[in-house]
Figure (cartoon, rainbow, N blue to C red):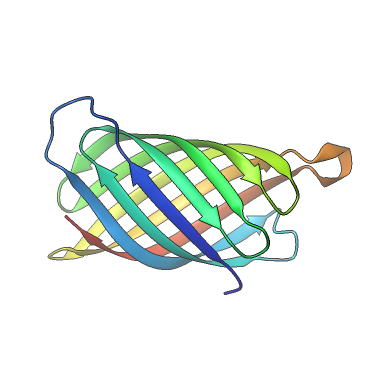
Length: 146
């Protein structure tokens, strides 16, 4: 794995619910738009006191990838299954190009607080006519949930 991605999810107060979230490590594979770097290491933290939240991500392989966005939890069968939808905007700092995208993250409980998070998303990096690319990525992380 050639790079490190850090993802932090912070929730905005909307509906009174117990604080829940997860912390995990894993890796992702870029299916398209890799620009010579197909694999990435990830570290994630997700905190949600409600059904709505915010997402911040950073990839430090080159100069970095910085994203911020909105998270919505449409379904959950806690503690076993949680589904989050996220929409993101940000910048590819290496290319100095804006990006927009989103995806779906599914967390599955395995044993007690341990689980697996599966995230699939797409991001359009807008970098002129020749360098604009669609990045499709899928990741797997081992997580501890609360």
